[in-house]
Image (tube, rainbow, N blue to C red):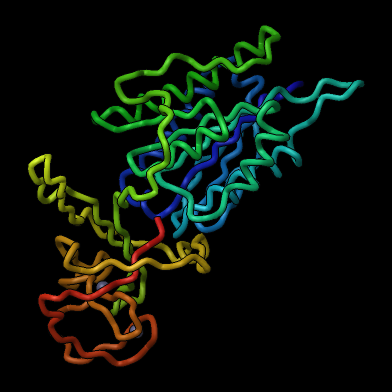
Amino acid sequence: MRRLPVFFVLDCSESMVGDNLQHMQQGMQSVMQHLRQDPYALETVHVSVIAFAGIVRTLVPLIEVFAFYPVNLPLGGGTNLGKALEHVMNEIDRHVIKTTSEAKGDWKPLVYLFTDGRPTDRCEDAIYRWNKRYARRATLVALGMGKAVDFSLLKRMTEHTIAFEQLGPDDFKKFFQWISASVMAQSKSIGSGVDQSVLPPLDERFMHLAKDFKADTQVDEQCVTLVGRCQKLGKPYIIKYDRELQYQSPEDLGINLYHFRLDNCYPLSEDYFSWSDHAAHQQQVNTTLLQGAPACPHCYADTAFAMCGCGKLMCYDGFSEVVSCPWCRRQVSFGYAGNEGFDVQRGKG
Ligand SMILES: [Zn+2]
Ligand SMILES: [Zn+2]
């Protein structure tokens, strides 16, 4: 039986925290539900799920559609896209059966690469290797979600670089329906003996082929994420702020002011730290740019935005005179930060 290997490579960097990660999790479920109901897919498709953030790991090794089990997507700091691409190529080498003169191997693998940001690692070598040895042997569909994506980089790996922008509430659902449809179209076409990539037409309301534009390295970040720990329970959390236009000057002046508005504060699992790239450079952000301070999602203390002298964030109930820092264990007492604000370590996205 010739298999159609399908690799889902999912960006689980911290900018995905909250809705996006949940949409992706649900999206994967719906794709699998659709595939299970399709006779061609059931017969040929084998699915693998790979997650990447600061590290890359295979969550589901290549298995038949009916044997697929739901996965919990992790979250970590960093967007190591280069390492993710290397990982997929190694998986293809290891698990996809090559056609030889004696026997037909697997069908041409499909790789769906999801990302919502720009890489935090070097991708040059991985892209070179991909184009040289894999681009013709596999179909890569790169799916960029949102505004912070480096599309010019994705376009260097594949002509199938698609930009997705969520406008309506059902767009994520339809986006994943398109992904299911594209896997099914592929499995059907090989059912009739054709090994060519056929992608269904794009729903132009929320997705389009990424255009050729030069990478603008000056594009501001679309969000800021900060990691802290509950002072009482020691558990980690992540605070996400989304970029928002605060003031737009008349066009001839061209001065636009942005700040970051609080999205939410989400509890994290300790797993986050093992998925993060600790070697990457930490950026800082001044708190005057951040609008809104959340409560602690673990103990509900008034603010999750208190900083120890060690530079780490913790929650603070506003009453205790001296507390112990959950990161460095030092005793800390809090004063008022003043109008100057202070700099905090921000995530790598
Ligand atoms: Zn707390
Ligand atoms: Zn500390």
